[in-house]
View (cartoon, rainbow, N blue to C red):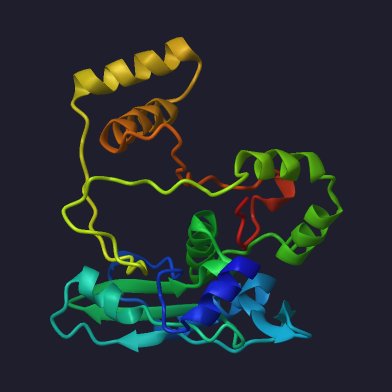
Length: 266
């Protein structure tokens, strides 16, 4: 969280740390019921009532007792889903919770829920959890009482003996962290823009079977086989044998964190 806070201070207009989501729904959504469910969701999770500010030259988090929230009505105006979501996402003021924004677009008996949230209070599992609970609250279902909150997890983490793990990773990254030098058409800019594309590829059944077979033989998972293959490919392209890749995981190592909203990144 400190890292994200500091990075945001460099460029307060950046939205690369806003992991958005969109849900298409057949039928119309009752805006009043949606707002009641959204308010109940924010009341339930401290992470959604948390803001961040500087105090004595250190970033601190501040949890508000109450934060009023309402969904925004969004005009479709002929825009496709991807464009709707792109236009909806915008920078947050980290000192002013909630760092969650919900939009509702409705047209021709169809509804689209747009979700904009800052990574400093959330991760992928948090977004899924919030959407599931929002749907339950909207449909009048009673959720179990909220358990421990993210600040409880933070305190528990501070009290754990992690010195050996910390020493291990510091040793792994002793010296300069390697930068992947791919043979690109153009030189990389000095400041990353985060502009890019996404390519979805379906594995043919025969190749998928080979991947799963290799995973079984090696005692790993299909993900591990594919990651190893990508590492080997990058090594071929770059002629480097020391490559660092970020790999997203749930980060929830304690059973009490399963239903907890927050940023679980190791």
